[in-house]
Image 1: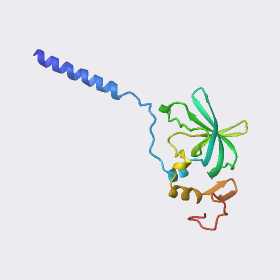
Image 2 (image 1 turned 90 degrees about the horizontal axis):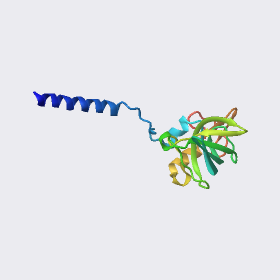
Image 3 (image 1 turned 120 degrees about the vertical axis):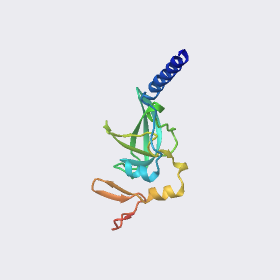
Image 4 (image 1 turned 120 degrees about the horizontal axis):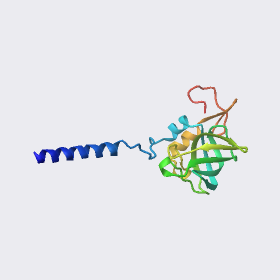
Length: 167
């Protein structure tokens, strides 16, 4: 009879332990792997740019980035934008090196003091420019870019009258 009680006690303890371990909320960064195409459709901004200064304030990192070429969003070549990312890898922190050119994808984070702020994390397609393959570069250079009433092709030519692929 004592062995049954000990066995039952072990089962109850294991069950309680399992419930306690599995009921905690996960706080790790998790996102689906992205592609250049998927990121273009799901983001507000996509551009190539080079971070030249970074500062950390409280829970965020702020990267000052010079835009090289716009593929999506109301930005201009040469414009300085601020890419904002959490400073914690658990919150999907994006780590960029100053002086290195990247493809940066992000969402509207607001305008402050005349600067466009863009929310960017590892969940977007944010990669070193030199790591893009030829198919990705071809895709980017044939993107239609729209800003208000203006509509142009990323490769610099005006769009043609074609619904499927105007660039």
